[in-house]
Amino acid sequence: MAQHILGLDIGASRVKGVLLESSYRGFTVVDAAAEPVAPAAAGAEEPLRQRQVQALQRLLAARGWHVETAIAAFPGVAAAQVVTLPFSDPRRIEQTIGFEVEAQIPFDLAEVAWDWQPLSSTAEQSELLVGVVKKEELSGLLADLAGAGIDPRAVVPAGPAYASLWATAAIAPLASAAAPAEPEPPPAEGTPTPAVPAAAPAASAPAPAPAEVLLDLGHARTSFCVVRAGLCEAARTVALGTGEVVRALSRDLGISEADAERLLGAAAAGAAPPAELAALASDPRAEAAVRKGLQPVVRELRATLGAWRSRHASGAPGRLLLAGELAALPGLPELFRGLCDGPVEPLALSAEVTGKLPAPVAPGMALALALALRGHQGSRAPRMNLRRGDMAYTRDFEHVRGKVVRLAVYAGLVLLLAAVSSGVRIFALSRQEALLDRALCDTTQKLVGKCYEDFDVAVSVLKGKGTAAAAVPRVSAVDVFNEISLHQPKEVELRYDRIEITRDKLHLQGTTDAAENVDRIVAALRGSRCFADARSGGARRRGSDQKFEFTVDAELSCDLGAAGGRG
Image 1: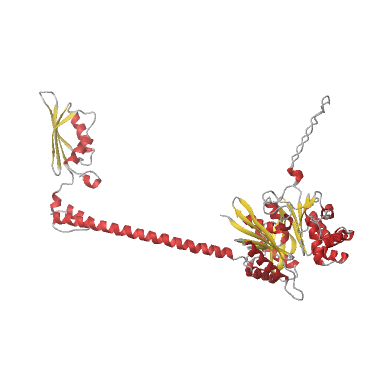
Image 2 (image 1 turned 135 degrees about the vertical axis):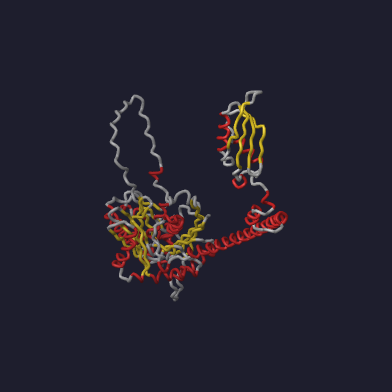
């Protein structure tokens, strides 16, 4: 069943959301939108968080989104620590990581909300990324989001969330990797064919795929994420952003910060600047101010990549992707060119995603899309979630409880129907039993002059002495005749001239070809349980045809009716 997942990026200048329709077969970007955060009114002390929530409410009201699951990034900067442990067993990590985190933060562990996710793991050690925020800040965020009608399933630090873009193949591949190599032209006619070199020895193992870096340049924060093979290997968020560039432009060009933002926005969008600022767009001081404002970001990214390379003994990343509202700002790729071995370019998404997120919009919506894709990953997503312990997401339990209640109602209905069905069957069987008892009573009344409704008692009475039923023989003549026919020697030719069957005796008279055949006949009859004491009455030759006349007598000792025969 399809599920609507909202990725929520609560920034200092804009609140952005990407709505996905997630199913077992994949995902579809349903909608994406951003709402500006209103500036604080002059002379008013309206908190930023309150203005962000108001922007979120306006965004949800304008788009009319039906949200079943929400994943939000923690606004601001969450402290990130890399912890190395000399083992990789998840149970031992759970038992140990709390002590390591408490030793690295200046707060008591009960005062913070924190979680971890693995960066790399071997048999000897594991590297973990730990995200930490003040618990009061997280609880305030959850309360404010609840006021807007959003209860996020997970709240994650911004840095490691970008890895979901690679894990779900939402990133467009490198142009060099996607384009096939052009075949070499054939040699000109008459050109000697070069000798074929000897085959090089096969490589023992393919080289690992190069890592890629995403840099999301926000208004008040900048996030870095180093990804290899869809997994996060390093992540960090710093309290630097385009606000530094705006202030540098405002100061160096002598304009307001609002005009500086308009000037930057027009340059990033490739549009003509406002007429009153057109002369400043080509001022060399503007480019110098941009470089000066971004130097702290360059310095922090260089330090982050240096720490990552020292831990992994790896070379420079193969590509650096720029995200954020100013990702397409002219001169920005040159500023970061020396930090990777490959291209530095604005974020480009795969063809499956660009329908609702075209190229000009995609870099600015990178975090919101990554968060929605993290929700689409489900149990395959990294475990990082700051909502743990007493602030854990409870809708799952409420959802399960609702399902349990519905299942209990359905089970009760099934049991009720089963009870009704059983009651009807019992009633029908009881009526049939009453009819059978009545028929047995009528039969015994006619035979013995007394009514018996118990079958066993009736049978014992009918078999007892002194009753009319006692005169009924236990074995019928047909049963006895059947036993005689079954116990005749097949190799003996004989003929019975007379067969007398009484209640308890059998008398046979017949003729056969030889006197010794009589003994065979008697032996065969003794094999029956009805004629165990069969005995010969003698044999004599008949003068007319030289055949032997014989007689056989036996006591009837069987009860074929009780043994399952006819009677």
